[in-house]
Image (tube, rainbow, N blue to C red; front, side):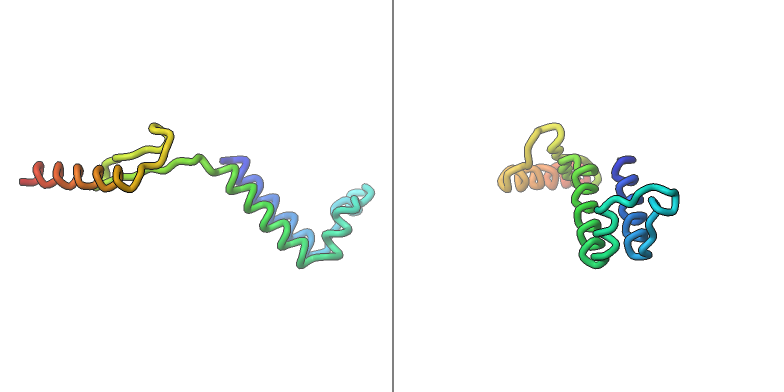
Length: 107
């Protein structure tokens, strides 16, 4: 999760550098890499590419594959525990069972 936040910060810093045309390497006395020169000279394409690639990376970093179903605040299905997503028939059965159970407890 912290790595994903770092990617977000880096994405915006790189986009700001590209849009501003600022070259931090020459500012600190280093030779500018060719990639940065290309990014600065192709601002629109570079910003779109940085934005979409970083978003894809962020999505992969924060994706857990979790799929949780709660009914009236009670967890009834967990993909993490079962390792799969419920079939529609299973889902309807879970909902019906919980409706019956909540109706019985409230009567």
